[in-house]
Length: 184
Image 1 (tube, rainbow, N blue to C red):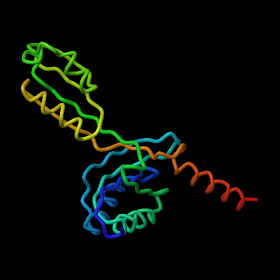
Image 2: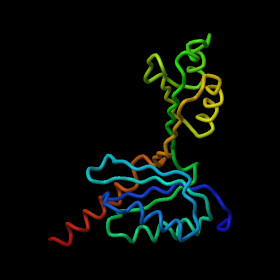
Image 3: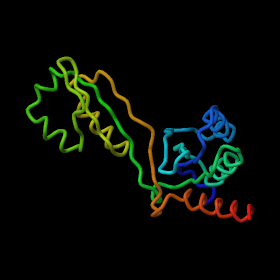
Image 4: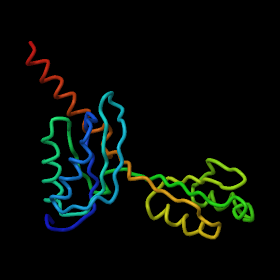
């Protein structure tokens, strides 16, 4: 259904120009689409970066936003997906009191049950890392509250499509072939 509100992951492939994030954010704002999370980083293709945005809206609104963003010169290609078409995760870091944490009888079991690990430990605090879905990082948060959470941060979603190769690579290959044809 075109009018059904769903969660979408929008993946924008770009040349990473200054000011692009604010311009993209403005497109979402003008279309009344909230940005639930955003992350950015390099891809396997040199010079190509991606911005991953999670939003909620109708397919029509999300498609229109993607088409508008794609018109930018420094944007290579934009794709949007529902959760079943991608593999995604978030990263969470929890800083807790070391003294209280060491008082736990089953530290290894707690971390193992949640697929978490200690990334730093000193006398004052311990930092635990967990990668997973929002619900999983929140579940660990709930169990760690008894150890006095000093800080907590969760990244925006990062995602790859379920296609064997990133769709943008196919697009770039076609674009390069067309460019070579023009130069003959």
